[in-house]
Picture 1: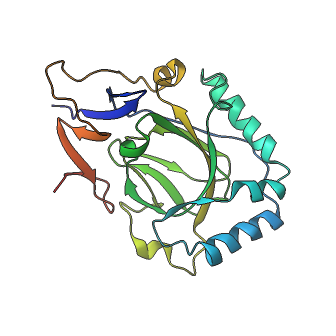
Picture 2 (picture 1 turned 180 degrees about the horizontal axis):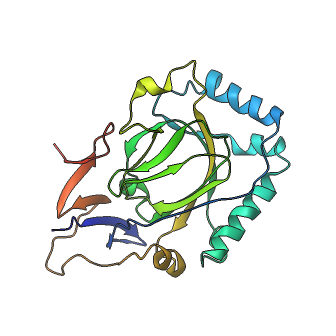
Picture 3 (picture 1 turned 30 degrees about the horizontal axis):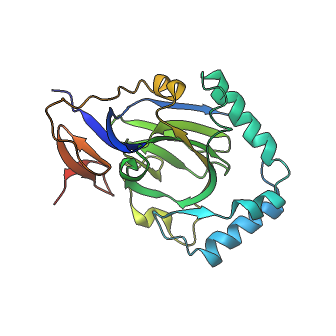
Length: 237
């Protein structure tokens, strides 16, 4: 039997159910390299102010970065052109954007907090031998400057060393240059274009089923969490 992932998410004033999509849209965009000054600023931020530990994913100060980032608009325009070509017109401009940093990423899903969204990421760092890995589907996307992805927040994912079968903190030692910087947008999953692009089916819970009162992801009807090292689903508790 095929596993069925169901995400319960907040929609207006009610909890709504939907299928978790296993579709990952990806591409490599031609975006300008960040300047040496901007890269140095990011390095100071991640090493001195944030103390980014292996597996951590943290927010970076976007407003300050934009002051030192004359090509920011070109990067966003490239992402907008790509999403429009995928049939997602105007979605990017209407979505919140943030600048993020990660020193790898332990496997996790974001369906419990961002179940109403799809993530849309543009990676700005050079190739450091890392992959964005979706263990449930087996998809691995090499991360390099210009890598663009859109995926369901309920889909388990992690950033691991290329060639590795899972997340290992030892792969991200402090003396290794393995920090990835990326822009991320939260695309509304209920937008018809987003839902269609990811082939999301909504309101899939049986009418007689008891509706959860909080956002969560269920596997074959059971609440689950993601093993941070392997990416496999495991029961809660």
